Length: 162
Ligand code: IMP
Image (cartoon, protein in one colour):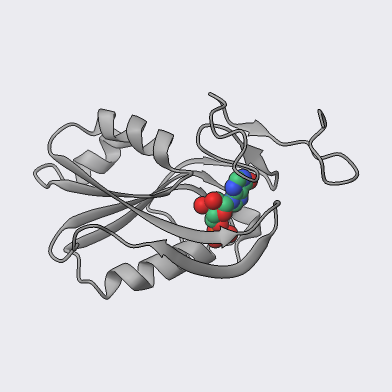
């Protein structure tokens, strides 16, 4: 993915915007493969409360530190699910007039899509399972698992080892 991204913008400083907190491992690994000039910024959104179901509501919890006007911007997301978060971000960022605006996602739950959005670069399409690890959480847990794992919930919404 990094090679494909860099091929499209060989001479640009790629301004990576990580969506906190799920994207941090993916952003760190992607950035190290991009080569050339890269800068980072982060923003926070909340689209999920507790548990595994979307509230359908997206809220900005932390804005960017620097402006993106005229920059080549790459939004880095952990997972594309309903697409509501990405739709919100694209609208927000387009208004700030970047030179280019692209989206890289590690995982894509294609069948869950509600909003009409697509990533420009996708790591892996995955089935409709709740996944954790490699930055992805369930109620802030499991982010530090080194691999992406399917979360198995018991009958009362607890994980199987609770
Ligand atoms: P969307 O707005 O429904 O596309 O949701 C995007 C956000 O929901 C992601 O950035 C994740 O934070 C979270 N999310 C969606 N699916 C999962 C999952 O399977 N595991 C962990 N977080 C998820």
